[in-house]
Length: 181
Image (cartoon, rainbow, N blue to C red; front, side):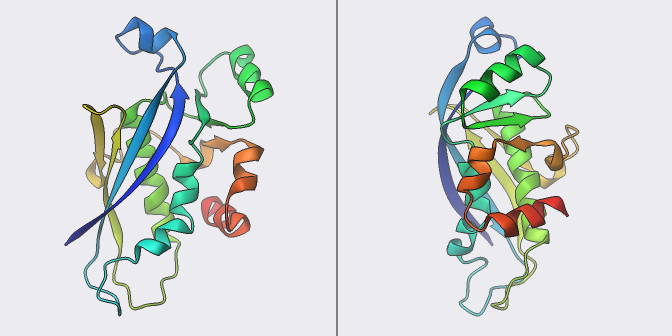
């Protein structure tokens, strides 16, 4: 059985080294829709794979970090990075170029890590994230599956969130502890 949870965020980026000039040379934004697909080997005491309310504790914080934020590739020049870090309170520095494909893989890795470090208490089974679908436009999306995790080298500990974003996290200390393990 698979369950799906949807999130959304409004974000801006530049996707360097892509084929289209506008995309690789200009800051632009999208109204992203993110779909998370979960599986489990059993249902919990409420006959659910995962209570959707539990996704609000840490998973929503991660995805919401990108809302009204600039996603910055860590390979940008120091001058460019400093400009955004100085002039915007909400930014995320990523070790990969911020494409829809990278977002889907990054969210997959974050959520996998969060689930593996969460103690469930309602008889949940082995809850896993099976895929993450990131809609960049109404007609295009990227979907990453667990089998895709090695397509890029992406250490979630190298994703840097601005202080403003971290300070907005609910259960901040608990999430920081999970992310540091």
